[in-house]
Length: 214
Image (cartoon, rainbow, N blue to C red):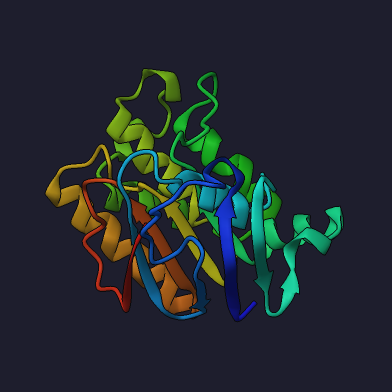
């Protein structure tokens, strides 16, 4: 996948509202593989909805979203499975960890589907994130910031053309923000992937090509 295009896209809940000022909604924009984008948003402007639209979780929008020119509404279930396993790595805002599993088990659950990282690779990511001592801890017993780092590690355990991150550092301090930004940039560079990161407040400390104000 080389391009994600949004053409006159708008959440249906915003239909009929006047005065919508956005670099994304009701615009024609293209997100290209290999480039880094920040979508800066105020709360309630639809950033998580945008991620859900691109990932195919929701279709309650007008306009068109297309992958390499193909309207995503026309994709089959099999095509979506392939996209989510090989083309778009997604970190949702709510992280969606299994609290009854350990941090390592949460990561391995995804990696067992992709076979993308070795166990040593995963351990090194835990070490780089400063949570190597939490690998065998239940996710439900971790702090929100630790859970966020586990979810980021899980996100990186797949091949992809785009890494899409919904508020990836909302619970991290500046130092951990920098570490996460470095690891995401390194992985994106290795794969030639694009990065799409959203933020309401704390921005991912990563060099970006374009900032969109939602």
